[in-house]
Length: 233
Image (tube, rainbow, N blue to C red; front, side, top):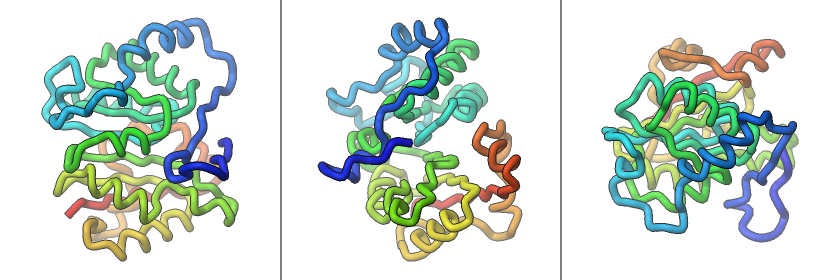
């Protein structure tokens, strides 16, 4: 992942736009033709009721920050047609893969932001999200870069603002010190609580669970993921 610039508002520049291998023709067509229809219009005021962002009736709205290849987001949207999903991912190849999922599953309850999730979070009204997913975010393994990890005191302030009381933040990582640091950060707050009551609550993923490519990569490397749920108080 490219490093954030050292100038400007680094809080907002956690990621940079990026494109990997050449898109397949189908993917390129979807990026050109379908993405503009699904992309959030951050230049317009956000509706107070986020369910109005979707072309089909939905009862609640969830957000996935950094959806990677879109396999989890596509699965959730297909399993929960009455829930609207906002997916944020700055990498074009991942966005293209999600667009294929959307087309193949005929999903109409997904909106996309193909840039930094902080831009959407700043745009959203207070207490508007029912759930936030943060699955295997970049661990920034070098010590001098760890301040760029998404779960930070400042970003937790923003998440707390946009989450409804009772909403949950679902965080998965296979990096031990990221999990430990996140638990310490959340333990110091009065607006979130860790919901785990037994070991299986953090050892096992939320069911049903489709898995992700990053989770499979962690398993091949011998790393054990943990699944942490924090409730907004």
